[in-house]
Length: 546
Image 1 (tube, rainbow, N blue to C red):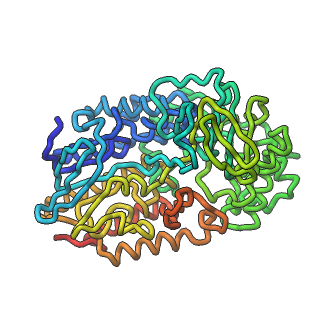
Image 2 (cartoon, helix red, strand yellow; image 1 turned 60 degrees about the vertical axis):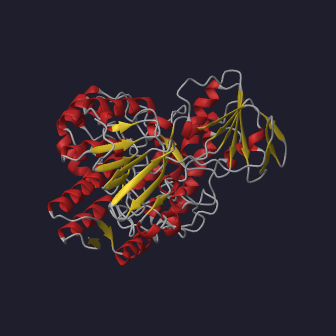
């Protein structure tokens, strides 16, 4: 049951908070989680917009801590939609009786370290205060919606929605004139579905995106069963894969058509091995997703531009209107700069007569009016305005929690020039405060459930180590923290993530005034995990105890 005097206070009840409850409770710890929403699920609770879908195969976007859970749950699709993932979250909460340790509808406004008592105190929006020796911020990497400050936004008299805060109740768009701002991942997923529902959809695009078709297949029973039979091996393979995805190809799903000897090679290692005509043929025959298989496209600028141009040729072949096609073609950055977006019918949606694309780099939005949007070229009237403008990623939720550490140090001040953390797990000056998939860890470059389990297990082992050795608190040494941040940035150099013109939310580039620093660890999940294990084996190297 819920306790007001927990050993561990967890902020958030998404997948990270849920597993943390289960893990810490099994260690004999008294646990309390505070959750702003009315139920579990985190990002899958809030992001209910039409078309919301995971970009990791369903069978791998799952917990590995319970063999029974692996055998019981079945996925309906290869890449699952938001409702099915939320059902999975609820099943996990029910199966492991997690809700008894969660206080819902409770938003945390401040988290303060009480140095004399060696306790963390969380203050909720209702003024309630809870104290615990350990605090775990399981607030998620994509949990603070970003809404741009546009002149006159408050004057719009129609309905305003944000993809990251979509209502639980059904949104009826039939007969409505709908405007959507943003063509990132959520926009790309939502736009085809919104177009089917609205009377007319107008899309306001700032930056074209590289997006490839998602797997549309229903889950076959034979494939599901093969994963169940092989889950032990698959979890091992996940631990050795840079992105935490095993790459396992079940025999039940293998299709071996006859090979056309005149066809270009199937996914050769290097795109520069093909002529421009062969590249176009690869895209025509195997879709835009084939471009993701060329390894040199992510390490060689010439190869990257070859892939970019093949991608643009592919878009031009799909979109009927040449002007619209050109506006949908990315030209200012390359494949690999941003997290890969998966779509369902994104480009063909712009062939509809009831869909209009507005390029705001050509005709900027000047203001929101009571009736809609006014650009430098014309005015547009809407009944519904939808912001698909993403998140204040990775640091947003941590900074919003107003965390104050030792000697009154505010996390906002410590991170004024960008996030500084050791392993994405802890910050110097904030003893016994842990972050799950924080900045400096693989997090959003990895299968999040694999990353979450690794982090929570590390934190649980660390708490046990403190208790077994009668140690009061742990925090990183400043020099270890700074060395790790330098390593994170060094590893990112030379990758497509940090090339000139790459302005992604990995760098905080979508938030005005946010320091430009590469936040996730691009060195790969196995390398990161091994480093975490090595640090523990060396007596928690880089940490200090008191």
